[in-house]
Length: 156
Image 1 (tube, one colour):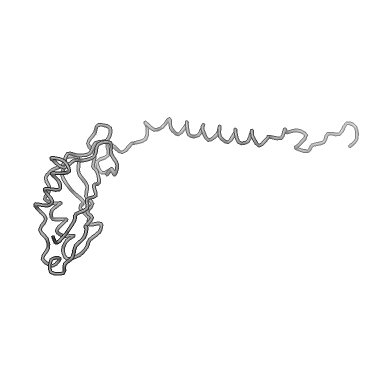
Image 2 (image 1 turned 135 degrees about the vertical axis):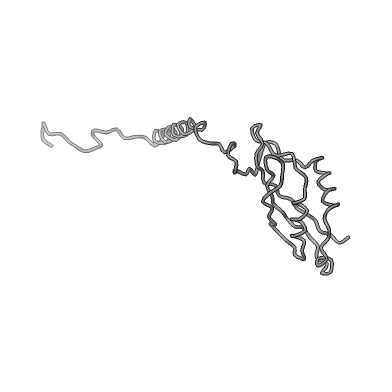
């Protein structure tokens, strides 16, 4: 290089950034992004006021009138073992899913697992006839809540 000429390589004009500074800068940028996105939480609809949202986990679970023991008494009293299941000695658990509405009524009943012999249909019939539940609550408001219920069919 002659006197008076300038070396224009990037290393001469820019400082090298150490790996530790790169890590700290990355963390700072990530935290800044998280903080900016968190500021808009109140502006985004949380879904609690929406009529069609169904919650799976809520602060206060729905409750059958009288509690769990009353639910099992209701099921024991109202389930009629299907004739086909008796004849074929079918036993086991039927899993039913349903939604407990804001007013406590039961809707959207689905059989998740059936053992056959009419047991799934019987489970749906009994769930349809249930009295109104105490609905689930989220942040103090009644919400639609999904509920899964196993029903035992035993020939004893």
